[in-house]
Length: 263
Image (tube, rainbow, N blue to C red):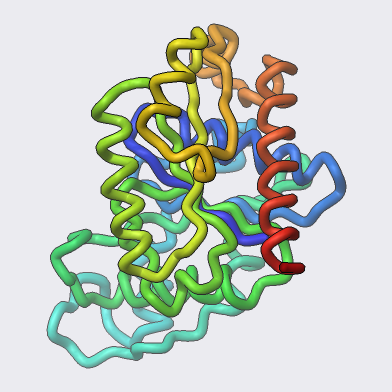
């Protein structure tokens, strides 16, 4: 299972990525969670102790690694460098593991949408291509709304792109932009999760803006989730109801994909 999770900042996409990874790991599945967001918070959402992650540098900013694999230093725009760097050993060398979830802090594409062709971007895109096309495990990628990490070849490995929205026009406008980008990349399964649902009217609003067939599920607003952030705890540790809702979303997703594969 290869999943990319995106959405407007603040919608709760990292919370979903973290709890979803925990749900899979709790069932004994091998899980690799990838933080590809410039505002890297996935470690916190997964409940990793700070001492395990505070010294980690995003791979795209690890100068020695970028130079070793591409042949040039980061930021060397216009220089000749390796376009297909070796990346198959990176996940196991650079990940940290806690409670059955491996975490890889990848970093983000620079100059998203501007066509920045630099060694760190090439390394990161090659890594994601490997993770999504060749790794035999559950891979969950938490990424920014621009989804610049995904090229056409990489996108074919994504079982689903999950866009997290909250009740509000700006969130849904961002979701529409993400869906268009996904379509341009050839991602056929783009699904929506409504988060921070406080009332039936919140649910109704999202349903009025998104086709029913694209709705994967809803997650209730939870003061406990907000409190977990203040206490630097994983959302999966504080609200059983949210875990239940995310598990139901996972089941629905698995059934969708299984049904598509057998049809």
